[in-house]
Image 1 (spheres, rainbow, N blue to C red):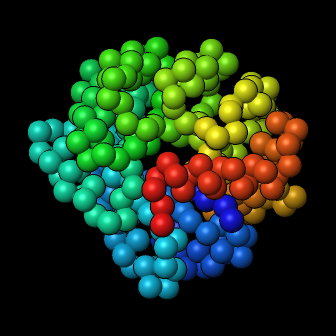
Image 2 (cartoon, helix red, strand yellow):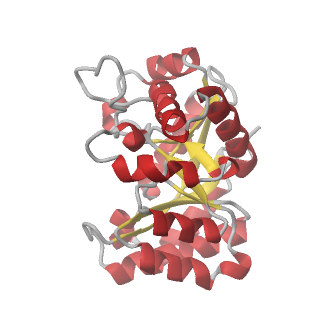
Image 3 (cartoon, one colour):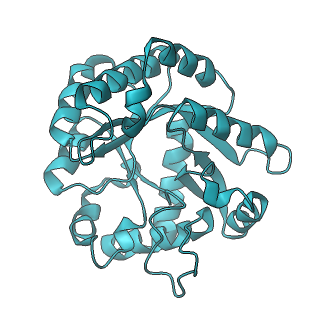
Length: 265
């Protein structure tokens, strides 16, 4: 069994063959997939996907409800109320994708921070874990998370690509770490490859972030360069190689961790 904790299935690159994608995932032993909500609209879309395929693929699809820092510019007073309503849906297992992204600053930093803090509070109120994004903003993100430390819910840093110092800072806050195909990239992944062994096995989860971050250790790269959940095995293989552990251990442990973290059934 494998669990992919981060898939952008509402992305337009998937709209023509979702059923085939889910079948290929099953054939590759990916039994549960968490669809990422990155805005009000995208959250509504991933919840709709969970509903649409519930009978055909029972207990396979789940969702997060949140506003990505890129979309924080759309955050207003009614947004958190809308998210709270969406979070009550039975398929929603986390609040996010939320956090800070100071790399591109598609939204003003103060607006990102306001949206982030509001979603932390929503997670606390809804008793749901947090699905976090962070890029070039670890210092401020850690400051905000520490300010909620006494009642911070469980949280996972999705698609972690930071350095050793940042990794240990997140682990010190009892956060979990999500690893993607970045670990398989011989051009950009060296730092992550060198520190992945420092992640406690019971804090490690795996994800594709499909359609992005196609694993470069695949024997044959698809012409469309679209990643999908069926490729999660290559992420697991990359992690196992750099931790010097068996892929079976990584698969079993990360799946058990995801089941407990997201309270999956």
